Amino acid sequence: MTATAQHPFPDDTLPLRTQAAIVVRLLAIQGAWNYEILLGNGIGFCIEPALRLLPGGVHTPNFKAALARESRYFNAHPYLASIAVGALARAELDGEPPARIDRFRTALCGPLGSVGDRLVWAGWLPFCSLASLALFGLGAGTSAVVWFFLIAYNAGHLGLRLWGFHTGWKHGLRVASALGNPVLRRGPQQIGRLAALATGIAIPLALGRVIGPGRSLMGGVLIGVALGSLLIVQLRERFEGWRLSLFVLAAFVLISVIR
Amino acid sequence: MTLIEFLPLALLGGILGLDVVSFPQAMISRPLVAATLAGALIGQAPSGLLLGAALELIALETLPFGASRYPEWGSASVVGGAIFATHPTHPPGAMTVAMLAALATTWIGGWTMVKLRQLNAHWAARWRDGLEAGSRGTVTTLQLAGLSADLVRGALLTLIAYAILAPAANRGIALWSMDARLSRALVVATAASVAGGAAWKLFHSTAGARWFFVGGLGVGLFLLFVR
Image (cartoon, rainbow over all chains, first blue to last red; front, top):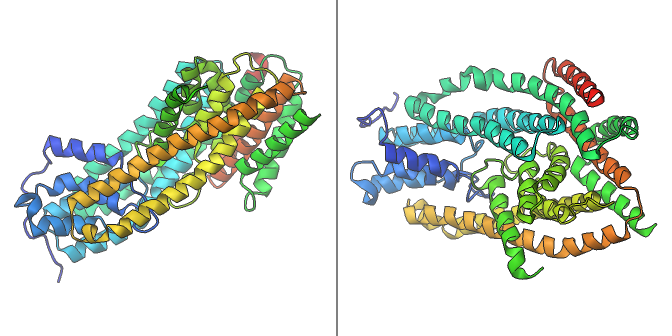
């Protein structure tokens, strides 16, 4: 037998004030991130404004039980955690059985983590960063480069958080189907290709602008970059590139200062 | 520089350090933005952008996946950007020592983030009774405590790193013996090598990505040599 909702929430939408409070809190969802409950407290913190709408308000056992449940261990990509926040808020307000909500929370962790990592950290962020570097390399001004990056990145970032929250709220515990959205399924591949294109354009142009006018050094630098990249790819399991750069630059400084 | 002069820089480092993970993750902490803002604070935004672009190439490698330990670029870019911007004529070695200062700070910054997460875990354990009882005061306090601690972490890191590394950088620049363009070429070649390696790591498994990269490289080289 399947347990069902006790008293479905009468409205299709949350009050605007509650929505605004949740969306603002979503930006701070990782504020207390830790190795014990990971994102758990952040989920409770974000859902709390919605839980105030439970019958009887904040001083009832129902409210306290729901907040305690939602503040337990949880892990997800911080942007896509908005899907969980919307869905869990709906489930709590609909009075879904606690055991069902717990199972749903557990099931949601994995997909929301891996999809978000591929789409955002390994896709959208590098793409926006490389496109901005290409713009920088083409000679764009300081404000143009910075604003381009911030507007492009945050259009995706904020759009994803808002879409996630509304999708989660709309579908409740049936939100798994929303993870089949073409943007989430095929987005990482498409963005990956665009980012690869941007990498090819951005690296030589950015090199050119940082080094400055004149081409006498450029051939040697490009060969050095190709060999350096190969070395870093070879060393990738043993040594991170930024650490390697730290040691290379430290050695360079020592040589230049002592000489 | 007095403590009062350091404070705006420390505050900027705190705010940008907070952006890395805690709030609002709008990527104002990326080197391209953070170093430019630090440069703007010194009155030399274009210098900040120049260093930010070089640091951004290295930061491409950093993917902030969940519980993994990664460098903290926000506060570090403020330190590097400010050091570079205080030498607006870009004397030989200025970019190298500013990059080195930023990379050293990012290393320490990553360590401080681990400590912050341990502190948050300690608080979560201490307030477990409140969390299990569904106390909204406890949930909110834990969240605000974590956010505040992160802000303080970033500010202190920036303050201490800049106070130590800026004089060391000035000393290094004064003793620098290598040609300015050659120094800069070496720095940016190192950074671009990391970016190249990072790009391969990110996109090598994406179908067709290598052809997009080759096509982009052709366009990039063409634009570089015709401009």
